[in-house]
Length: 323
Ligand SMILES: NC(=O)c1ccc[n+]([C@@H]2O[C@H](COP(=O)([O-])OP(=O)(O)OC[C@H]3O[C@@H](n4cnc5c(N)ncnc54)[C@H](OP(=O)(O)O)[C@@H]3O)[C@@H](O)[C@H]2O)c1
Image (cartoon, rainbow, N blue to C red; front, side, top):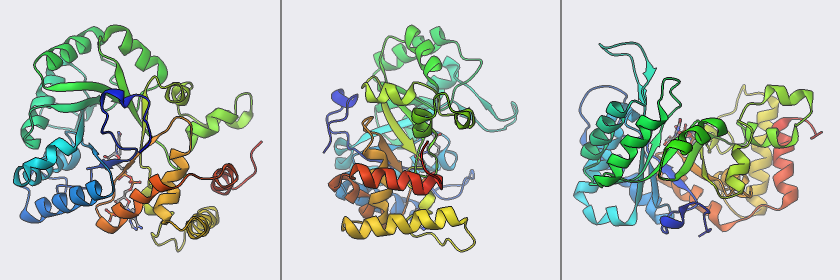
């Protein structure tokens, strides 16, 4: 198991995170079903068997039902909790009687959201609470106060963010007493802005990439643990039907398959290993609900891509040579 830089306090953190967005059935206000709980249990068991101990939630996944299904599965096997690091997110609100879709990092919403997550998950404490998206109306001092209260009440152990740029993180961190330990961003072979930004300084093409200058370097420096959402690239490079897809994507999927054969591993493992090879030691968050695919993802921890293979995947994904 790799030594993740920022999770020193969370010694059982795995290099891969299981993303729970696909649990809980449809995104509606109905009740969870027996089948939803069984799916959650199957995914939890497959993840733990693959060495994955970190579970990623958000208050909004399946409108709360992802946490409810997960919580119901945990209630049936309470011993599993101590083998897990559970993280959840707050701050996105969908259109409702009070207003349109909006982000809400007010202390009232943060506190209420944590109570809701804990209740649905049936646990006493979140290991990590993340602010899901930046809210232009956020007040860092008020967030800092909410975090301190949540920590003092024992409801949250650690804090993080998601989809934030480096200045936003710095602004928050100046006010918040606790270290922000995680930033979760979209990254994969099909979402490569983080890496393009590293090599396109001073190039015209650099204007079209937007990851957020400095974020990947924060990860390399061990200041914050980067997690990659969408890390499996939606399965497009590991078995999803590509008929009608762009030739570049087809060539990339073929290259992934070739490398899977030469490393004697799964295609999923190659896709994830591309992120994990980066010195930021990016933690991929995988969203599959298929037990065989979860096991295939777990194989990523057994390989390390050669520099030449890492670059060949990147060039194939770009469809052109690096500058
Ligand atoms: N922080 C954020 O703003 C944010 C945003 C989005 C997601 N997330 C987190 O990141 C996690 C992963 O994100 P994600 O689910 O968007 O991306 P992902 O892991 O790249 O893709 C997972 C999706 O791809 C499908 N898939 C994988 N392999 C496939 C194959 N061979 N054939 C067909 N379908 C295949 C899965 O379906 P099956 O279930 O059928 O395998 C699932 O729907 C989420 O669960 C969530 O925890 C965070």
